[in-house]
Image 1 (cartoon, one colour):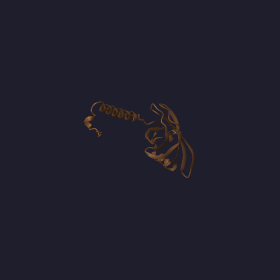
Image 2 (tube, rainbow, N blue to C red):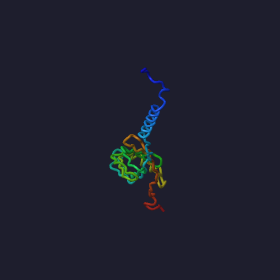
Image 3 (cartoon, one colour):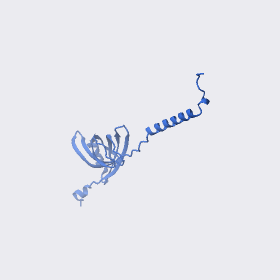
Image 4 (tube, rainbow, N blue to C red):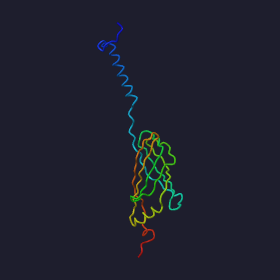
Length: 171
């Protein structure tokens, strides 16, 4: 008769073909979902800070960063945002203007535009008194084209000459 075959009737070569087809399908799916390489965050150092103008206690500035890509592939970065602190006090926020892809295991200059409350920074510097050097931190994120965010941070010291050394210590 022309009825449907029972599972027992499918033993032999048909069962082997279906098993091989299922295994081939699983291998194909596994191959298509390849493992993404782990993306390491870039390292960042400050090259320079340029004050463009000061208006009503707010300074517009450009921050030149040297960004190093430790990965074996280029990083297509859409945006970089940073927060800068001086002696653990907020000093500035900045964001990227334009970024080319970071070359694999290479370095690139990244220019950030930002605003700083000049009054707050001046007050912070006055309250530091004779504390030399002044510690700074840069914390931020680099956002890739696919939306992945990579956090980074850098600490350093700003060598500041003390007033006594600049003008001579009073007798």
